[in-house]
Length: 236
Image (cartoon, rainbow, N blue to C red; front, side, top):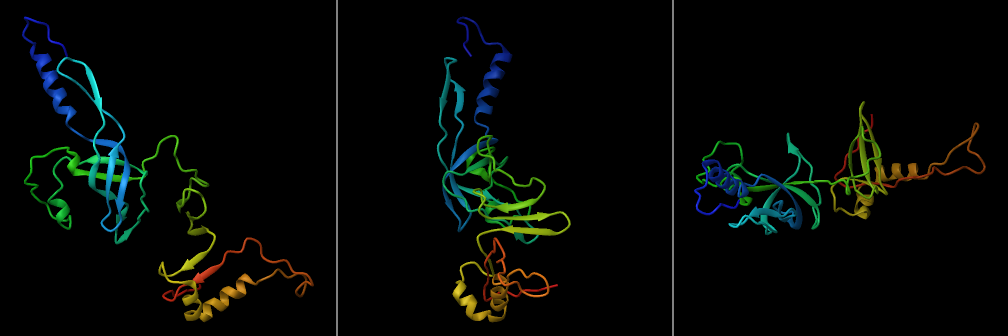
């Protein structure tokens, strides 16, 4: 805002300048890009991808890039003893939400007690939380069925669909039951009964008439299934 010479600014102009300067430092939510992610504590360094715009003392519009915000807690769905973790990687987009008050003391607790922040900081990048999965019109995930609960990979190579009525469909190159990281060879030795069942299933061929045909057709699109040692399989 340019003030005319030899004229005192009106109260409205003064208030507009004051409020404008205050709001310019009040951060609410911005899209940001992940620069680094530490899965051990679910913290990330993120770079806001929208420029800051402000007026200088001469009333000219200026812009600059926000700096990288470090050690930001990353939010994933969690509750009732359950959680979902996403394999966040550099380049992923998040929504950076800045807390109304300081989160420093809160993040040192179990989060269940009402606390005094003992800090007057408000809407600051130091109190930001990153919500994973912000999409744009150019990077939306292509859904094969918009009515299902879907957990999957963006390239479509693996998906789990949960449908109303309790039906569950799994699309994958292979399905392994049990703790991630155990080898299939170990599972084969320690789960002989289940592996025998899997082997029989994968070797199954169609039959015709009253007995097997002379040239039976193998089951198409067979998915190999491996059970890890810690797995108990229940059949109903």
